[in-house]
Length: 272
Image 1 (spheres, rainbow, N blue to C red):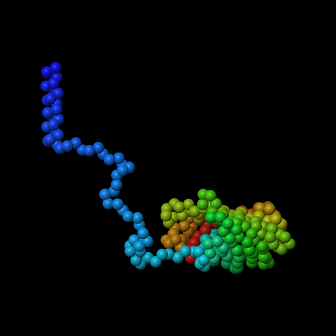
Image 2 (cartoon, rainbow, N blue to C red):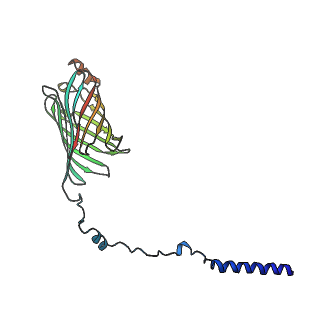
Image 3 (tube, helix red, strand yellow):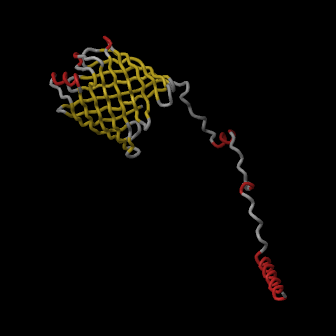
């Protein structure tokens, strides 16, 4: 008992000495939920923003304003099937966020003349975040006699960022046609972009004057690799494949034209 009491007193003596040497033990840590910042940050006010950016007067919005956009997706030279041609494909709009006037033009020319040319003038209205309803007219200039079509369709951005156009047409004598276009932009780098593109055309009735048969008439696919020196200016190279089907292929054979072909393309993509 005496020995145990001595050991206990010795332990208390040692603990007291250590406490005196190193100071008192720290108080238990305060729970994180009860801690307060040493220097609280006051909430940001409009006066603070104005003082920090005295020269910033805000930015304009599209609401209630007239805007426009013009894109020449293709301005190109083609070589294939023993022929050299120039072609273009253009789209643009003018209007606001919801309602716009759209226009599209496309065509092709050889050394002698314009062999194909057409234009669209459409009213477009947005019905969802990424899609527009369009309706208006299409005017064919070449080939054959000029012809006017009524046009109705949709266009927009499909899932996985495919740009899609689907348009139906009604012309004289209740002739009907339809066209489906889709393209995608694959970023190899921030400036080097690979663009696959496909187009399919269909017709309800044959039109011998223009060399068009009923059913599936033509299909075209292409790959274009462009480099954007600026976002608004990008030269490109690529390859395009085209094919005629059914009655359209029969008309082409009669005229001595090829029903399928592969072309090397080089051109420039510009927008403003």
